[in-house]
Length: 88
Image (cartoon, rainbow, N blue to C red; front, side):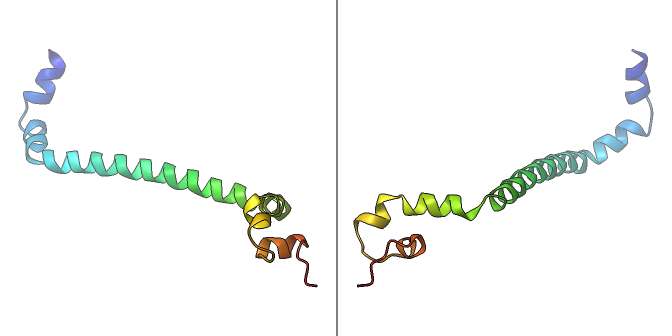
Protein backbone atom coordinates (compact mmCIF):
# COMPACT_ATOMS: atom_id res chain seq x y z
CA UNK A 1 0.00 0.00 0.00
CA UNK A 2 2.80 2.40 0.84
CA UNK A 3 4.64 1.66 -2.43
CA UNK A 4 1.46 2.26 -4.41
CA UNK A 5 1.01 5.62 -2.71
CA UNK A 6 4.62 6.52 -3.43
CA UNK A 7 4.39 5.60 -7.12
CA UNK A 8 0.92 6.78 -7.98
CA UNK A 9 0.03 9.22 -5.21
CA UNK A 10 2.47 11.91 -6.25
CA UNK A 11 2.53 14.52 -8.93
CA UNK A 12 5.71 13.72 -10.83
CA UNK A 13 6.26 9.93 -11.29
CA UNK A 14 2.93 8.84 -12.72
CA UNK A 15 2.54 11.87 -15.08
CA UNK A 16 6.09 11.25 -16.31
CA UNK A 17 5.33 7.57 -16.96
CA UNK A 18 2.07 8.40 -18.70
CA UNK A 19 3.66 11.10 -20.82
CA UNK A 20 6.67 9.04 -21.90
CA UNK A 21 5.07 5.59 -22.10
CA UNK A 22 5.75 5.11 -25.82
CA UNK A 23 9.39 6.18 -25.47
CA UNK A 24 9.95 3.80 -22.55
CA UNK A 25 8.36 0.90 -24.43
CA UNK A 26 10.39 1.72 -27.55
CA UNK A 27 13.66 1.88 -25.60
CA UNK A 28 12.95 -1.48 -23.91
CA UNK A 29 12.13 -3.04 -27.30
CA UNK A 30 15.23 -1.62 -28.99
CA UNK A 31 17.41 -2.67 -26.05
CA UNK A 32 16.09 -6.22 -26.31
CA UNK A 33 16.75 -6.29 -30.06
CA UNK A 34 20.27 -4.90 -29.50
CA UNK A 35 21.17 -7.52 -26.90
CA UNK A 36 19.84 -10.37 -29.05
CA UNK A 37 21.67 -9.14 -32.18
CA UNK A 38 24.90 -8.78 -30.17
CA UNK A 39 24.54 -12.39 -29.05
CA UNK A 40 23.99 -13.55 -32.62
CA UNK A 41 27.00 -11.56 -33.80
CA UNK A 42 29.20 -13.12 -31.12
CA UNK A 43 27.97 -16.59 -32.12
CA UNK A 44 28.62 -16.04 -35.83
CA UNK A 45 32.06 -14.51 -35.26
CA UNK A 46 33.01 -17.41 -32.98
CA UNK A 47 31.85 -19.85 -35.65
CA UNK A 48 33.90 -18.12 -38.35
CA UNK A 49 36.98 -17.93 -36.13
CA UNK A 50 36.73 -21.63 -35.25
CA UNK A 51 36.32 -22.56 -38.92
CA UNK A 52 39.31 -20.47 -39.90
CA UNK A 53 41.44 -22.31 -37.34
CA UNK A 54 40.89 -25.72 -38.97
CA UNK A 55 43.59 -27.07 -41.23
CA UNK A 56 42.95 -26.87 -44.99
CA UNK A 57 43.93 -30.52 -45.45
CA UNK A 58 40.69 -31.55 -43.77
CA UNK A 59 38.65 -29.76 -46.42
CA UNK A 60 40.81 -31.03 -49.28
CA UNK A 61 40.42 -34.61 -48.07
CA UNK A 62 36.66 -34.17 -47.87
CA UNK A 63 36.58 -32.56 -51.30
CA UNK A 64 38.75 -35.20 -52.96
CA UNK A 65 36.82 -38.09 -51.47
CA UNK A 66 33.46 -36.86 -52.73
CA UNK A 67 31.96 -38.79 -55.61
CA UNK A 68 31.06 -35.57 -57.43
CA UNK A 69 34.71 -34.86 -58.17
CA UNK A 70 35.76 -38.32 -59.24
CA UNK A 71 32.76 -39.75 -61.07
CA UNK A 72 31.69 -37.18 -63.65
CA UNK A 73 34.74 -35.32 -64.90
CA UNK A 74 38.36 -36.21 -65.59
CA UNK A 75 39.74 -32.83 -64.66
CA UNK A 76 38.25 -30.80 -61.87
CA UNK A 77 39.88 -28.35 -59.50
CA UNK A 78 39.58 -30.85 -56.66
CA UNK A 79 41.24 -33.61 -58.69
CA UNK A 80 44.02 -31.20 -59.62
CA UNK A 81 44.52 -30.32 -55.98
CA UNK A 82 44.58 -33.96 -54.95
CA UNK A 83 46.94 -35.00 -57.71
CA UNK A 84 44.43 -37.37 -59.32
CA UNK A 85 44.48 -35.70 -62.73
CA UNK A 86 46.02 -37.68 -65.57
CA UNK A 87 47.28 -35.23 -68.22
CA UNK A 88 48.47 -37.94 -70.68
